[in-house]
Amino acid sequence: MQPRHDRALLLHGAKRNAILTLAEVQQYGIDSFGDTDYVRLYGMVPAAWYARGIRILGRTAVECTRDALADRMGRDIAAAAAMLPSPVVIDPFSGSCNTLHWILRHVPQADGIACELDAQVHALTRGNLERLELKIELIHEDYEVLLANRQLPPGRGLIVFVAPPWGNALDESAGLDLRGTMPPVAGIIGQFTSRYADRPLLFATQVYEKVDAGSLAELRALFDWSDLRVYDLDAPGRNHGILLGTKSWKP
Image (cartoon, rainbow, N blue to C red; front, side, top):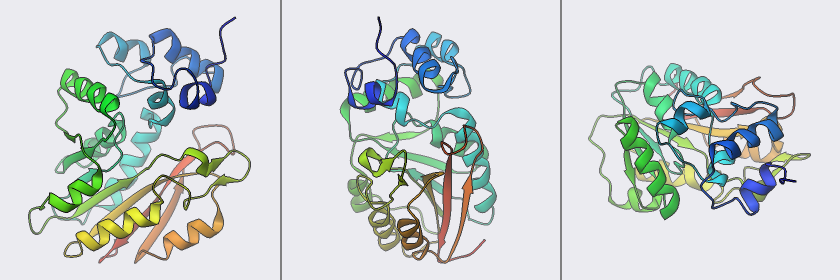
């Protein structure tokens, strides 16, 4: 009897660092969400993207933002960023780059930069982007290296998609504690705010429907303007969303 393909097996168990077969991707969708095609990526159902040569690890299947959610996020980010001049979009924890792909679809005038420190994830994602001919600059470095070395063109706004690994910060009963992500969300935002203090910034932080109220309040206090969006795509209590927040401007 095959093991249940759920978050525990793919994120913490034997399949964490394994390249999944199509059957395993589909089984994860069935066992966890009752949907064979749950892991939709780059605008395709699993059978379609797998046929194109796209490959992901077990942990990427759990951590990636699937199309339905990434599309909604991208639309809301684009609406909030409508006044930003020629924005650059940075994803410091890119994984599959699917969220960044959808943000760029909705903010077509933007340039996309993604950071991925893990060598295995970076290699697979780089191959996936090349197969799909997606114009995303994927850097095999920690985002802090980018902050230290990258000079952005003057006069351009910056969008940062903040989605560090949740790890033990997510408890299905208590919800997501934004202080417990790896690294903590507030620290990431503080680093970007300090490094690019000369330009308007829009942060889009991925959150869970159940979120620790104290950690959320601490995060919102960092911004000049903020707006919380939760998307009704899954069963009640299991939905994801984003916290939009700005520095140096208000939409």
